[in-house]
Length: 175
Image 1 (cartoon, rainbow, N blue to C red):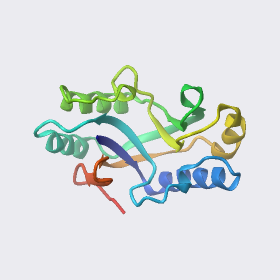
Image 2: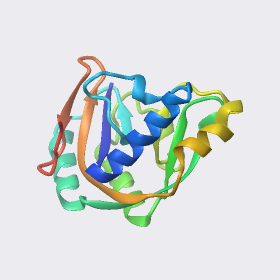
Image 3: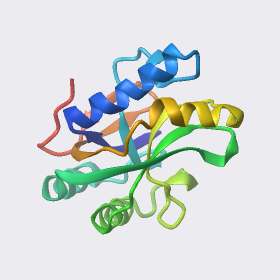
Image 4: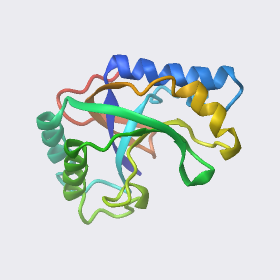
């Protein structure tokens, strides 16, 4: 599996990580518990089995032109009523156009994840992967102390087979 992800500016990443920490301290599920070095707040735009030939280069050019991109976080929700707990991202016209352009590059790729396909995609930053709907009220109170704004400043691809990330574009600042 290969993903296409946008990465948050340092202040926005700090805000999301603080929400992860507040959830963990309260004993709720949280991505703060995922210690893998690639774990960081991100917006997944696409997931496919493998990139078509030339896609990585085309995606890099796309992100070099589009980033940084303003982002506004909205409410905290549990998707599908049971998992995951997410901070919704307001889908600005610029973000929606970028998402559609990513899918144009990936047209015909095998294994397109239906959650990410244009028209079905719900842009979000994950807070916890397995979450009980009955804890939603407490999670909202802990995680969503405000509705912050920031920027997406870089893009990457996660390779599920090797559990590694690869930058997409010259603006990438991976830690």
